[in-house]
Length: 616
Image (tube, rainbow, N blue to C red):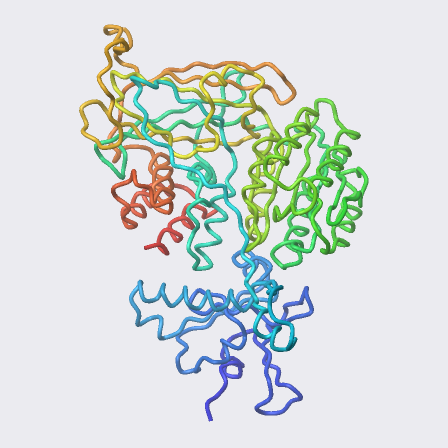
């Protein structure tokens, strides 16, 4: 008789205990990792077979002779990679079958296995045909009830920026974007062997997930300005301009007092291990960074909104954590009502000259109250006037409403992140705590004027939903992005030099609008770049002007940061299947990224290369 694979693990893999029902040979077995406690009453570990999540039944169906290798992950080693799904440990299995396959065959197998696992583990809704005959109720139920997997993630559709001619449109204006939720969301799709939705890819958020080596500001301005000009890796006839901002790093002892209101979604849609349980553990990381002079209040919302913890001193950590631990999910989602209450509490405890912020944690499923993106935008624009900033944190899969969270953060003087596991929570709320939670400048806008002498055409890569009208640049009533302490912001422009044949932009001959070349006056300038920003509590903006020389260095000698940022942009454009990128070779992307790894103690750049390696 064939030995069941679960029993074959006993003694073969360290830390594994196999329990047989009623102690009877041949009875049902369960696998438990020794030293792992359960947070949900189920001690069964997560199985990863050839890189794909699997159920215990799938594991049991494998012939032990077909297993090539097995290893076990526990505690933080499991949750750092697999989030709360790995809370009871992870058993990672590689089969001999996978070793014999080509990369293409292996990915097809992964996709098939993941779709089966997702089908078995995704919540479902029942659809009934109200018009069905009623003479046989049983037959009606069997014929007219259908379980449909719930996968209602929402992403705002947008069109990729096109090339512009400086002869007819010399100005490019946009708001900075420090968000990086798109990258962590894409990482989740790739790690789960899923196809990445095109509209989930925001190239600027991918670029800005990573930090770059820009110098600290040396002037009175809150950020330094850094530019680099080289050649475009996906089209060597074109060039690439990198613009980088480095926010001033505020020493911990100089941080202003914080007035935080946690606005936590406890509706029924949050009842999953990678939602409310992960959310609560994430918030505890932020609580750890609080001081006596800081204050935290907790507002929750489901069918209605309520205050579960009034403003509490930051050093009363046990009280705050106890309130978090008591939260449970259930009910519909009164998102608008929750936002109203959270801002009310924030304003009641407002710290003048301090850091006043609502931190919204949700899957974004607002289905009661003000539901449309337009209604939510109007609400949050009203609340922005209070001087309270907003941070949005998205959780979960299958029901994640990225479009709503992005609308809220964009219009609420805020930022947003997608938290898929405790590793990402630790990065956003601990390692980058000051950048995520402490603004040093708001309404930061960039306007660049290209010199037609050196630029036939240009396009901004990404930032599609951050573009502004040119007249909005000097209008202080127009909202733009915020910059946090120590934050870096990077933008890339692809440039077609004069004389290069292309199919992207054609400038017609104009009789009355001839380009003024100004003799040799500006012959050495590629562009002039302007920045506007306000202080966090200010209403009037300050302008900075800087010129960029027309001096491009060969890509081979460009900085590691330039190469890596270009590689990330290239990968994002590939995922979006950009029609403006002729070369989408994965090996070329990986090679460029490898040249830009530099010193990367956190391993994020190396992780990016692993993601690239999983895409054909």
